[in-house]
Length: 116
Image (cartoon, rainbow, N blue to C red; front, side):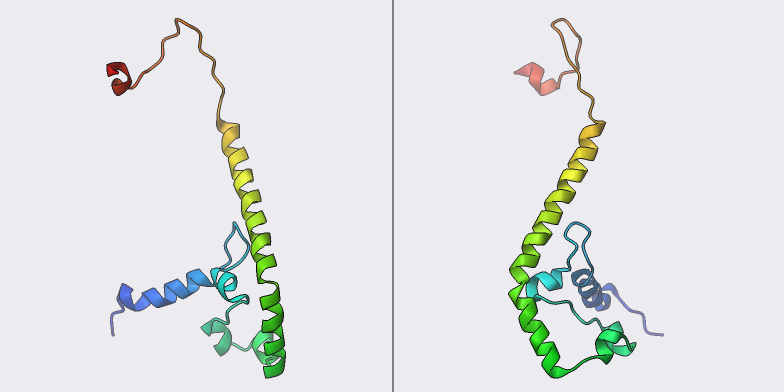
């Protein structure tokens, strides 16, 4: 049995990373670059609707249409990412407790700050 090293698996892992939808944007890295979704090797071997309904002329037309909407998809992804960032920020800000200090309160101070 041949032992497979991480170097042999790296291209497959990178391909999976590029074709996986990201939570923050809702898009794949592949679609950002090329304007359409990739056909992964598993989809070629297993008959699915996307592969079964393949026709050369229709695919060319779809690719041209997708390229027309690349910028719009990127803008929508940027909006989703900003919305996600605000949601996360709101969650962490909720955990912060405001504290007020008065003159005479004891507080911890960094060593370097006390040497200054």
